[in-house]
Image 1 (tube, rainbow, N blue to C red):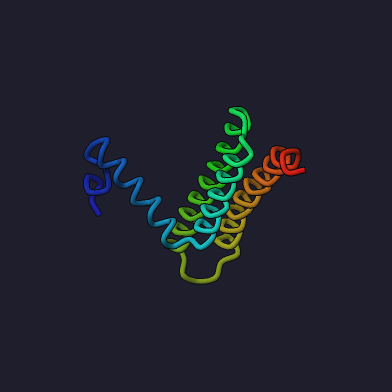
Image 2 (cartoon, rainbow, N blue to C red; image 1 turned 45 degrees about the vertical axis):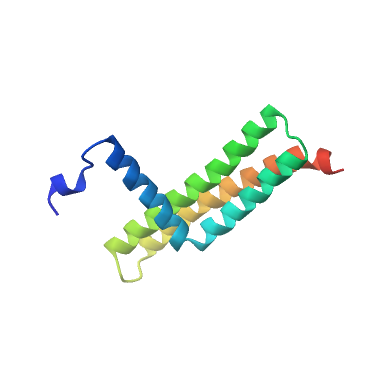
Length: 122
């Protein structure tokens, strides 16, 4: 592929390609679909329990962090798959570390959710 064919021609093409990447991650990623469903449930809880502006900030930040980490994880998995088709301990570690980032972001989101919703539920 020539370098010119890879580059975006303008800002709108860059956005189009970014949205295409997000759609790919959603279509191919079972975990991302689950995380989006959980995010929707959390948003419904926040509406029902009348979350404050500060609580909304923490919740949206936590949700977005999980989704961002999962899309980066998907990108890393795609890159590793591009480079090697055979088993490689280095490839496995790269995928495991990326997945670990998603686990940390998810743990962060769970802790934030517990802090915000425990008092409201009980």
